Length: 171
Image (tube, rainbow, N blue to C red; front, top):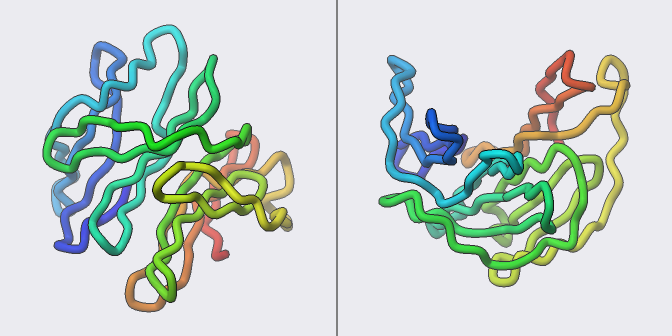
């Protein structure tokens, strides 16, 4: 999930026919409204959009984990949900959270078991650091969600630890 600069909360979900859909979420009620299908079909292949992130220009990026193809970075149209591929990331990782940090350079990050920045025109990742996790997140941890607080620039992470435990962390 991620907030557009106007305060609308967006997310991705799966409809009843295993189609990935872009949704908006009412923060008061939790009700979701389908914007449209993304074109990513998880039926049988387990292809999935693992995370989304808006950059400072309002572009909605999506990280796609394909079961039988390399991972991709793409753009979702906020008004229709349609997915357009930017390119292969070159990563084969678990977790696959992405987040844009607006200051100072509006960088788009990818996290799983390492930390990378993603080229916002080609999708290609540049891994620049491994990640160190400490207890209690010490049983196959990976980051599966990432977002920066636009007021403090602090990057928060959702950490999944072997599918049994989830934690909030800071990068």
